[in-house]
Amino acid sequence: MSKEKELKRIFQRGSGLKSDPVLDEVIADLFNPSQRAARLLAATEKSLVAHERAVQANPGDRKSWKEMATDLENLHKYGNAIEALQEALRLDPNDTAGWLQLRRNYRSLERYDKAVEADLEAVRIAPNDVSAWFSLGVDHRELGHDSEVMAVYKRLRKLDPSEAKLLAGPWFRLRVSLSRPERRQLVVLLAGGSWVAIVATLVAVGDYSAATALVMFMVLSVPGILFSAIFFWWFGRQSIHRGGPPRTKP
Image (tube, rainbow, N blue to C red; front, side):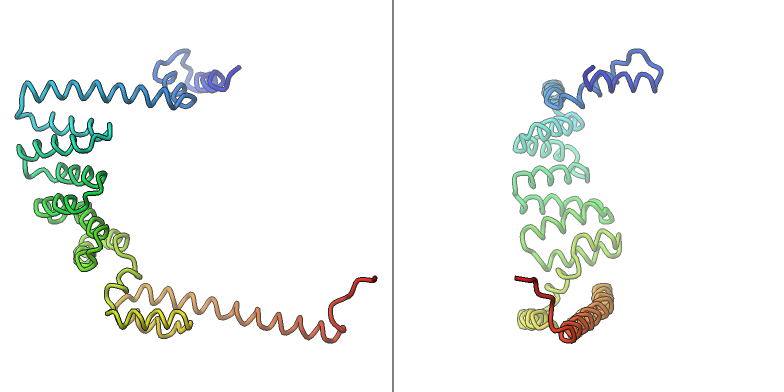
């Protein structure tokens, strides 16, 4: 008995069903992923044709424009999806989700500057939307706009501190907060292992969580270093008293 038939028999025994088309399809997909991909592709193309007909019949149907854009995005036709979304947003410029969907398609084309423009529209419409602010910060980070990322980080701290930490970690915030000479000094401190000075720097820029984590690391590391030193000292002493490590007979 094949693995597919065996799995189907187990599910049928557990559910008490002799035949279930949905179950058969799910099991078939598990063992034939290419078949599932082909079926989804065909369904998406069929859906796209239906939505294209819908917007031709009613060009003012914003929902059909958005659904057509989703089909195009799933087919990786990002340029066409952007055109459909632009039409949908012309009909309803206050659609936050539409602007974020537009941003997603721009990112797929690595057009991060246009993605930022879409993000700005989204946060203008919904100033308390955490996902919109986070998207704006991520796109600014792709462009290397450190000061803009920090501005978004401060905004996110008020809306959702956990998302703010995901956007800008402690080392990113430290790098942005320090001037160029201070960054060089930090590199020297890191190379020299001056952990106390690094903790002081973190406290100075207000990153108390990173400073606390580093102190805990130092506290936990010191006993390990001392133990290793004592062990090797003791081992060396034992070797000396015994005349060195044992030698094998020639």
